[in-house]
Image 1 (tube, rainbow, N blue to C red):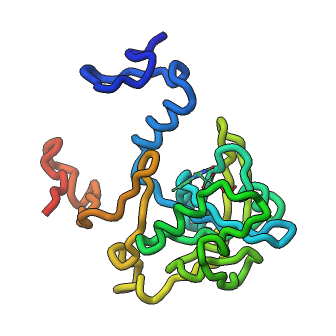
Image 2: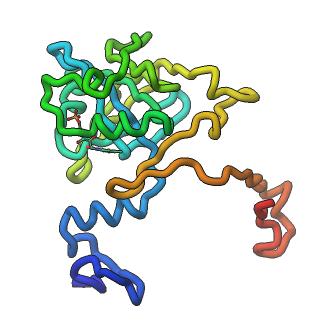
Length: 225
Ligand SMILES: Cc1cc2nc3c(=O)[nH]c(=O)nc-3n(C[C@H](O)[C@H](O)[C@H](O)COP(=O)(O)O)c2cc1C
């Protein structure tokens, strides 16, 4: 064993050095989902081959390309969402603002496949433009997605999808782009912990020629105001 601790210690009095193979899957899950934060939440809506609406949050979620736009999300194992995504080849990512966090969390219940999470959570369906999956009308922005790839990664199944249509409510828009504070997104931390945006600040990105060349190491690092 190359690890400093055989199991997660209650208190850490020296740096943790870990070969992930030395801890069990659940212990690694809490470590990784505690370290890789904040994670945005894809609230994925699908329609089953029988026409049942499905809705479930996925925080293994990220944007990975912008031209054309692509996102990824991963299902740990095979759940209703992934089954529907495989069958239909399409889905909607409903973006989660703080006003919807309780409904979002409720839809993570292990409802049987024949149960409609829109109904259980008291949510309304809005039609999508390019896909047959339902949209959550109460969400303030949506990404309609078509599946391009699926990749098995460890115990996850990574879905790579192209965003073929985007919906954004006017309330989220300011000065030509998304206003993060008006958007008020919720992110997932480990376990049952969530967070909203804290302080929003700007940091200019330096250019080699314009800002850095000719300076001493560290001298031109842009500092927070
Ligand atoms: C905030 C949040 C994020 C989650 N992220 C994921 C995820 O990334 N992948 C996953 O497989 N399950 C994730 N889950 C658990 C699923 O939402 C849960 O298993 C759900 O019941 C799956 O529903 P389905 O069977 O209708 O697809 C998450 C749960 C919550 C509350």
